[in-house]
Image (cartoon, rainbow, N blue to C red):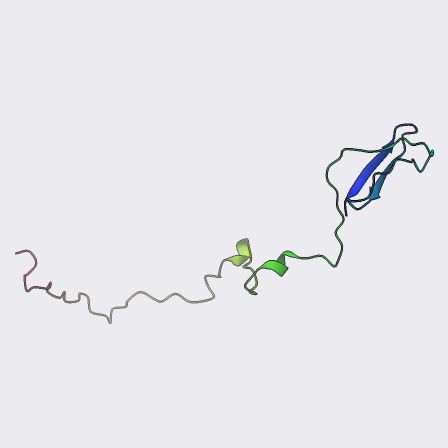
Length: 106
């Protein structure tokens, strides 16, 4: 339901009123009783009801969202990197001849 701002032109009394959109506008000022209570033009206001929602309620796939920031990058020392080839590997490996039997450089 929208919240409407009213102000009396006679006494200056102002009040916010929670009303249905279909309700008739108020005209009688609750402070002075004059018929000069008018609805003011303001930004839209509304009231939320219920327990609310969180951004985690609408992720879609049920998986937790990835963390943002520096903590999201994996630690480099957590998994050791493979070592480069040692001297036990042959220094050069033979190259296979190209398909078709032609030798390279001929």
